[in-house]
Image 1 (cartoon, rainbow, N blue to C red):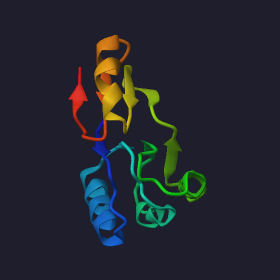
Image 2: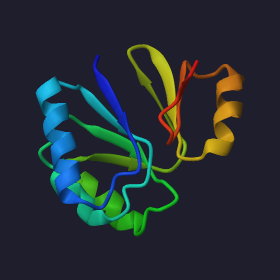
Image 3: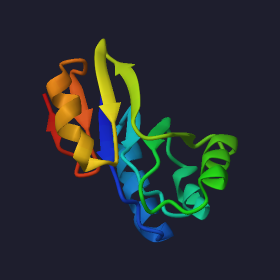
Image 4: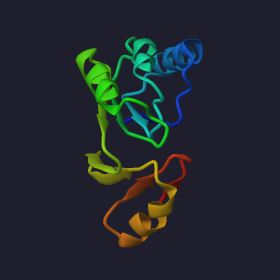
Length: 123
């Protein structure tokens, strides 16, 4: 499976559109967003993404209810409370936007992959 990790999406439709076009060309199968979608209107350029987006809220996300509903209702993807754990290719992953908990999550031994907003992968 080909997955891509991003975080801190700028509230700039052109930038998001360019990234989405690249991801679509490269045939990714999952987009993991590690927080800071910023505003509900950022879902619009993500609508052309050909795969599901899964993400967590960050510390700069405005209206979380409208963000969550907008991304879900438009079929863009799902935004969860931070941290969010899930399974991918028989691996346990957890994604967070809180750098202070990354080390504890990694040291817990529960997860195969810990993803934070800095997009550092800890094993």
